[in-house]
Structure formats: C-alpha cells, structure tokens
Image (cartoon, rainbow, N blue to C red):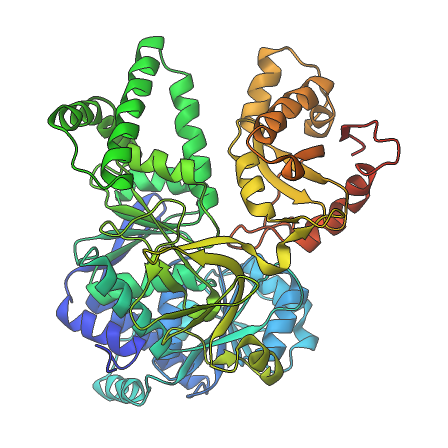
Amino acid sequence: MKWQYKSLPDMLRRSAKEHKDRIAISYKKKGQIIDISYKDYYDFTLMVSRGLKKLGVKKGDKVAILSETRPMWALADFGIMNLGAWVIPIYHTNTPEQISYILNHSQAKVVIASDISQYKKILEIKDEVPSVKIVVTHDRFIPDKKLPVLTFYQLTEMSVPLKDEERKEIEKSIDDVDTEDTFTVIYTSGTTGVPKGVELCHRNILSNIHYIDKKAGGLVDKDDVFLSFLPYSHILGRTANLYMPISHGAKVAYAESIEKVADNMAEFKPNIIITVPRLLEKMHSRILDAVHDVSEFKKGLFNKALEAGKEYLETVYIKKSKPTVSLNVKYKLYDELVFSKLREKLGLDNFKTFVSGGAPLNQDINKFFWMIGLPVIEGYGLTETSPVLCVNTFDKLKFGSVGTLLEETELKIAEDGELLFRGPQVMKGYYREDEKTKEAFDDEGYFKTGDIGKMDDEGFIFITDRKKELIVTAGGKNIAPAPIENLLKNTKYISNAFVYGDKKPYLVAILTIDLERVLDYAKEHNLKYFDVADLAKNEKILELFRKEVEKVNEQLPRYETIKKFVVAPQDFSIEGGELTPTLKLKRRVIYKKYSDKIECLYGDDGSCYTCSQF
C-alpha cells in the first residue's frame, strides 16, 4: 500500500508547508513559554542537517542522541533523518557501560548529548568508542581537552539563514529517503540480558500512524495539544508524542520534567496525553489523597459523584446500553458540580483522552478516570512493532483488554498462549543480529512477542503475562505475577511490588513504601524513627503492610496469595536499576539486589512473616 508520505522527513516537510504559521512545539525557558511555528521548526531541522553534513554525516551513517525529552531531541531526530542517516537513541539514565555498548554496536559517528552530565559519561568511555568522532551538546560548558565539543548552536549556525542552495541540497537528500530505508535502531532496555538493536524503517511508523488514525476515526486534529514527557528513546513516546502530532499539524508541549507534569498540565492545557500506567497510578493516588483532606460535605459529594459515574460507566461503556433520562441528568449534574471542577484544576477542562501503553493498566484505575471524565485508551505493542498492534477506541472499548487489531495486522496464538503478530509495523529485524532475528519470527513470518494472552469472540485481546516471567511454583502452578503486583500497588501504602516464587512452595514479595502516605501515617500515630530505612522496619508499619497484603490475598486463589514479604526502604527507580525507562520491573535486577532478603522469607522454621534485615 502507498502511505500518505514517503518518509518521516517528507511528512514534516508537508506539514510545515500546510501548517506553516501554526505552533509546532511549545516549551518553557526561564519561566516563559516559547512557541515555535511549523515553518521555523522545519527550517531548524534543515539547519541541524546542514551542520551534520559539514561534519561528514551522510546517508546510512549513525548519529546517537543521548538526552532527556526536550525540543532539541526532536530537532536532532529530523535533522539526522533528513540526510538519510540513522538515529540511535540512548536513554539519558543509561550508565557509561551501557552507552559504550550501544555506541560500539551501532558504530555511531556523532553523539548529540543534552548537558555536561551526559558529556562526562562519554568522556569516561572515550577510549572504548573509537567510532565516535565528535560530541555535540545542547548546554554550554567548558569541555575536557581530551574530548572537544560543539554546541548545538554552533552545529546549527542558527543565526545564519539557510541559503537556497543549502535548502535544495538537503531537500534532495529528503527526496532520496525511501519508505523502506532504516531510520533508527532502538536498543531495547529490556528486563533481562544484553540489549538488542531494533531496526525500524519509515514504513513501520507511517503505517502505524495511518492505521491508528483510521481506527480512531479522526480523534486527532490540528487543534490538539499533546503533552510530551515520555522518553523519545522509547518508540511509544516517539511515534505517539512526536510523529503523530506532526502528521496532523498539532502542537507538542514539552513538560519540564516528569516531576513537573502536574504543573505543566495546568499551564499548557493539553487535550491528549500519551502516558504509561505508573503515572496514572500516581495521579489516581494524589486525587484520592486530595479528597481525603477536604470537608466531610465535599467528601460525601465526591463519593456520590463517583457512584453516579460508576452507574453511568456500567450502563454506557460496559453494558453498551442507552442511559435512562434520570441517569443522564444525575451524571451530568455531578459532572458539573464535581468532576468539571477537578478537570479544570488539573488543566484538563478541554481534555480528549489519555493513551496508555508500555505496561498493563489496573482496570479499576482505568474505570476511575473514565468516571471523572478523563478517559483512558489502552493499547498494546512493543518496540519491535513501532509500537501499536491493537488498541481500544471510543467506539470499540472493553475494559481489561488492549483493544482490537489495527487494519492489516494479523494475530496467531501459539499452543502455549504466546501472541504472534504480522503486519507492516513489524521491525526489519535486530541490527547485526541475524540469528536473534531468525529466532524472533516463526516460519510464516509472525513476530513472537513473548507475551501470553487470548482473544475473545468480539476480537478484543487480553494480555495475561510475559512468557518468560510466568512463575512455576514447586507445586506446579503457573502464576502470572503482574496482576498480583498491580493489586498490591493499588493499595494505599504500597508504591511498588515485586512478586517472586519460581520453583518455591509459595509466593513472597518485595514491597516499597508510598513515602508521602506512610510519613503521614507515622506522623498521625506519633511513630519514632531515625530515617526511612528505620521506618520500614517499624513493627507498626510492618503491621500496616500486613493488613494491606491480607486485603489483596482475599481477592486471590490460595496458591496465588503472598505468604511473606519484605518492606524495602527505597522505591524502585530507573536510576536504581530496578525499572526500565518505561517503568517496567527488571526482575533479574530486583532479585539479584534483594536475593538474600527473598531467600530469608523461605526460612525452614517458617516463623517470620516479614524480613526486616535492611
């Protein structure tokens, strides 16, 4: 099939022509909001191309971007693609060792980094990465003599307008980029093992955008504002939060950081937010905390509004029935009195939808957001699939599922329940890894996802767990840990959870503290403690966690219940190595880090319910 555009740079060029005076990106600098039009945005990418061309970058060369999500990332991305070169994204949280592997494996010639902290990582591994000839940084600082630096401003020569000849030359390079050309290699962060470089071509992304648009029925338009904070080093953030808006001439507003997302929502007033479940979980938690602190009258009003919301949700979106006049009036009344005020406070008064991916979203949290008028569309995909394979829509929605297939996407379910897909969004292969590429596909060209799931008779797909993460207990029971972990995370005082029990007689868990709530509890109960580590060992806190675990156990069959647990003093994090950049658990890392505590929970005497030896 012929896509609307020949390549991603061709897409930006056409949008810049059609929407030249519209705002392409907004961001904050020194407290002020800066807007850049589509015309200027496109011209800036050509200036990046001009600078890279002078450095000798040509079609097929690799240029790495080592940066947080910021406007420079997007400009560099297209500046590289305009020349037919390949973009090698590197997570800004990666260690020097991880960066060294990616730079060497990809054979990157140039690294575009954000600041001095990223520069220092490259400086540390300078002798290990002979392919890297130059480093470009966004921020200005005095570099080490061993590793010279060009600033992004120097690279682009932004104060020097593009000559007609320069523009024509770069646009000729854009014309030479083919739909089937590779444009990026994304190294999967993965939960285990050495990262693999996923090789994607322009067709993969263009087809994904085309069929998502077709399925969503015109959900996205040129007047939309996307709030961007997910890492562009991950394909979800890049496809849905960068390329999708550009294809429509919409605006991308950049959050200052994940910590400031709430503030930036109020400032930029986005109506579409691409997110991951963890951020929705935290948002849900903070909303309930805020309700807890209001007067009894307002609290009662909120609870009555939720009851009306639940009834409306059940009738309209679950039973697919038409609401009665009285239900319609009741829900609209509570929406006006309660939910509209909440949305306005959040800066989401003209909101369309959240789009959630990267990991399973707790069904109760999903329903909560629909009840308060902030719908969440959940989908599924992988880095290898650009990423979307299936997605819910407003017209075709089923809670607990990841929706139905995109057009031209085929599904096959293996005997062991593994989901296999085939479609135009599926990767070309793993870069320089022919054997691993061969292993990733079956004989008919279906990609093996490694996820276990099922499809119902209406075509809705349900993911139950990762194939490699299934726990097989000593008693032979197959248990998916993710649903249990989600239940634990949905309790009041538990921030994160890791369930373990492979080849063991029962399940145990590492639980992390929801610091704000636990500190409030400690204050209310006058608990004495030296620091958070000391608090995690406090008997009253352990008893509090026992009660939370028991509530979860009541919802589970006996063989899935948590028999013992450890309360960790620090939350899992990307920086700590326990989470991937999309906030999924790195199970091997967590087990290795806490193995002595976990094994303690399998003591012979069975006397201890918890282990507090931190």
